[in-house]
Image 1 (cartoon, each protein chain N blue to C red):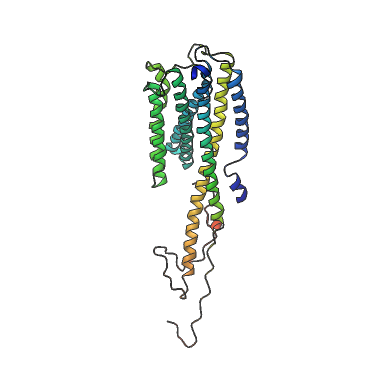
Image 2 (cartoon, each protein chain N blue to C red):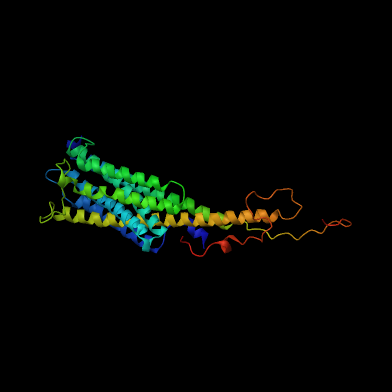
Length: 65
Length: 283
């Protein structure tokens, strides 16, 4: 096969494998970055602590403590 | 912070755009020179075109592992000790592993044509496989839990040990009789073994792969920065949430019990997450 093609099939295999491996890594990097970036706005929009409600008055006729 | 733009291009900045553009142009020129302009070799035929990706991949793997060792050294050095160096070392090692895998796969394809086998336990090949294995182990070590400072110290020592394989791997073809060919370009006191367009294209391949390596490393470092922010903000968020829950349980109206171990019930209102964040991003 290689004799007929002069080695072009191996060249194609080598270049193709390089594109797949390094390109795949780049895709993984971008996917990881996007997933992480999605978490940041979620954190930023988290509801903050509420103000403490005003102390309730005891019912009429009932002594505190 | 514009979170919308952050989601679209989370790790991009001016440097990545410039380096990425140069890399794309360089890859285009490299493909034209490597597949069209450069002539076939009298011995290796068309497969000599693999020389424009295989040695450059190996060099970038060495570069990644070398930067990992430098970052680890900087972390262990008391005057420069910072977790930034630890993160730099981890990012460099990961990009180096990507190029190391590319080097082994492209070399295996080349070997199948030149030697008739996909793999042989030649000194250079074996040491390159060992190099990949030890740095995969290093990356696994980085995933272990525990105290970040202690982990960084362990990883830095491990990285320096792993890096010892690099010079041995590089010199394997000189120290032992190997099936793998010796250096083509950088031969002490001798001219390169290739000339003309082959030499030009091979030199260009180092430049282009260097740009690609830099671009990947910049993005990988951006991911490290994002992870740090999430870790910091998530921690502050968790504190704020617990405080909020604790504050809500202060009045006698609620049947819920205070959070065990929170120690925050009855405390003042928690600040907003942003206000509660420690200044600066770095640890």
